[in-house]
Length: 499
Image (cartoon, rainbow, N blue to C red; front, top):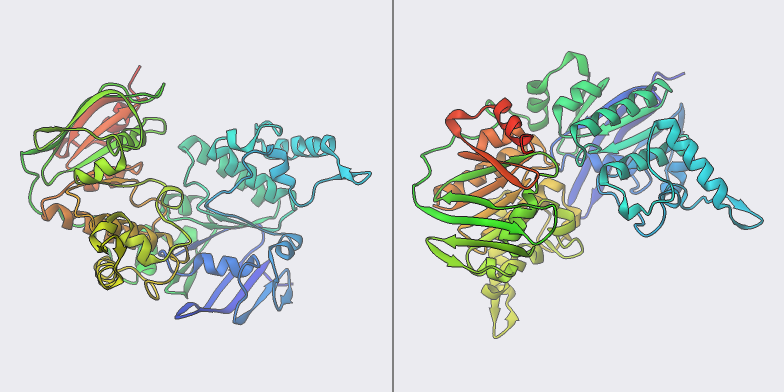
């Protein structure tokens, strides 16, 4: 008997103009959590899609439970074999009950009709098995993203899966929910199931994993036991170079001129932000910290004209401006990089070219007709400056890795020449190398005299990049902390202090 439940040997996958996997390897032991790590574009997702029947390898072999498999033709075959995958982006059928989302494609039947009673009983038993407290009859659209993530895990368990692939499973979870997820993972591991765990959160990786495999540029770098390595070792092997500092050095100090002043901002929505006041200075990075539910995203979306206000005033360079729409925000030199790049950022079916220039179309038109002689060079130069890894501008943006998609979105807003840029969770789901590139880009914009508002849920990121941090709790500003007084305990106290 093999020591491994799964072996993927010398897997090669080619796309037009791209060698996505270059003799990649993965060996997973039964009853273990195996972390798969690498920068965005390293080939992790492509390798998993080859395992899950979404892609077909051009070369290599897969050995599963001791049997050589020539090909996994589709996802149904993978599921029937006991291989399941929980994707980072969840796509439930929102208007159908949770239980139907769990059993879709294999509803229990009675006399040729769907047996809803049995489906309900089976769902209750399944949720009880993993300790999930969700009403099977609730519409999926009313369930929180964190619980939907756990519902997907329950669905994986229902297939009696021997291998469960989890792609960034904690990206939308709070700390308590992460603990709950880890309890479930430990239970699955104790039952002899194997978890392939993809994440950029190294603290989680080192805590929950037994083994760690690192990939770089589509190639296999190596596999180590988690107990024998640390974060610095992982970073060096992921990026192929030393990152002596996680954050680039900041040159100079912010100016004293106030470029943006927000007064008495109160949302028109109930239970949102109330009476928010702050100033943004020229050449400053103002961080906004807070816990889930602090209403940080809602605040910046209102500044950008995406959400209505009950009251409030906004001033730019001392003059009051009215922002009722995104068009107004753009006219006033304000840009917003949204939190959810796939839902509210990219246009997945459009090309990299279209996604890059779409916010600045007027610059590239002659008589109301788009001029590719203007669009293409501008997009190519902008993507080159941001080191976007891509075959060409005509490729759909959905084919790029998450980090490269984020760079295209940043390129989009830089083409508008906005002097105030709002970054909402700019490095979520992005590897450490791409993070450093984005941090460097932000500081380059500061050098050019622009000002930045940055929301981040990662405390080290806020403290490493911001000049000041405004802390919010339940829609209220609870305090400001200057760089020389940054203290994680104090920031967390402010983030949970509103009564």
